[in-house]
Each structure stands twice: as C-alpha cells, then as structure tokens.
Length: 150
Image 1 (cartoon, one colour):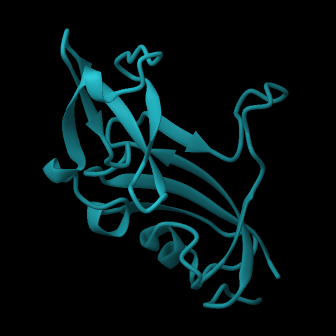
Image 2 (tube, one colour):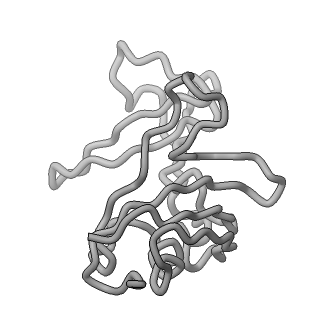
C-alpha cells in the first residue's frame, strides 16, 4: 500500500484539540447534518500550506490509516511574541470604528500588506491589538485520518 511522501497531494480528515481537550477545529462533524464539518483538508506535502508538525505527521501514512499526534509549539504556530502586541490610541483608529474585545480587525502596513489582529483590551483612550496567531504558544493535538493520496 502506498505511503504519503513529500510532493504527494493528500486529503486528510482531522480534529484539532487543545491540551484541555477543547476542539478548536475539525474537518468532520460529530453531529451529522449540522454542516460544521468542512470535509477533508487537501494539500500537497512539502508546499508549506499547513503547519510543519501536521505535514510531518502525514508523511508515511497510508490511505485509511488513523493516528493521534501532539504537535509542539515550535512545529505549530510558534511561541507567543510580546512584540506582536501593540497598544494604540483610539484617536489613531478610523473614527467610525467602535472596537470591542474579541473583535478581529485587519491592519494595513505602509507597504500595502494586510494582516489580522485581535482586539484584546479597550480603555477610554487606547486599544490593545494582538497580531499573534490565536493558537500561538500552544501545543496542539490532532486526530488524523489519511483519506486519499493523489
């Protein structure tokens, strides 16, 4: 039976969990018919479309095979970085923006590139924006099932 290797296009069903067991993402839904599952994730091994630990876990698997892996921070979204958190004055934001904790915003850099940030604190005069990935600084556990190679 063939095994997944670098350069292969694969389809994988997965469920991602945090250390406390909380599910943060899944391609399959336990409540059939609810529509929250996205179907299998499709990517080419070696192209960097998924986090390194996820990709490495698929290498060597055969279609139909399942396994559970824990991916350390360094092979997931990396550590949380304090320099990715900024406190900005409310006066520096668009006047029609009413920031709220938990709100996702998009920041445009001087070069025109945009990136997402999360509002983590709002005071009368400032807003704290966090550009870290929401899963940065966490080990992640994935239940994986290789559906298809090719």
